[in-house]
Image (cartoon, rainbow, N blue to C red):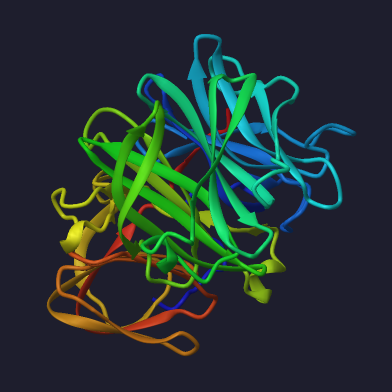
Length: 413
């Protein structure tokens, strides 16, 4: 284990160019689709379009053409930012933040797509940033249903520096109605979701009376932690109201941000999630690609099997991943974790050491995935951790490794 390539091999990313937030995640006609913030021209955060890949097994990904990009002189002239894909009676629709001007003010844009989610029409503005309630920033629509109606959450920042989530009703996807500030850091429970001046990429999962609100914490240009707030959604005069109960961090590493949730079917049905593995190290930024997504994960709500005590939501690795990726017999591992491996920690536990990031103990039963500069840690009972750094980690203790297949990309469609 001495070669430490800069490139990732089995994490989802474009062949070249820039990647950040996952978008438009949807299980559609038997396939999992992931769109993502993408600059196909260079490995730089600029001129953001929507990239697209899909999978029949959450492991082997097929590249599709870029779904759509900025429209000259249009409402997304300065970028097609984060959003979702939904399917209604008229077919697929992408709903996302479009930026038209240099000041960064966003609108919610809608594009209609074909049945295969490959070809998309021009953008239509369906909701502007509200000019009431002291809203200064709005971005990242997330659509959900409550009481037989359709609503949307938008991440926001208020003029006084308070992060917030806005609520819109959107039964007609072409006619959105602003319903006000849904949540803010003024709430005593949500006040723990700080520091932040904008709550980005709000995501809501509801099942069997339990709910989890996922927020990515942006503070003065710094991307911080991702948290999940456990609670419940109740009816308030026909509108949904979220009652927060407890907040916890979803990933304890340094490079996890802007995840997206989506429901699906089949084995492990529930809420699947992928997040952006940030790529901000200078020696990586010089390559022809930057950024990748985490391995697919599942969100456990509250006290579901494997959830954390106190009802705090928790992420676990999707069970399809290790079954499909790993090959060969296990062998004891010592020293640097470079290359592409699954590492299983034995009963004596292990310690990871890094020249820049320090050390961390890893509990017995944890599973590690190494993909060049990316490390994902999945403890048996705690939050996972995601890191990306050009220097490899070293492992000490009770651990065995198996090689990970690198053929996790199918031919482009």
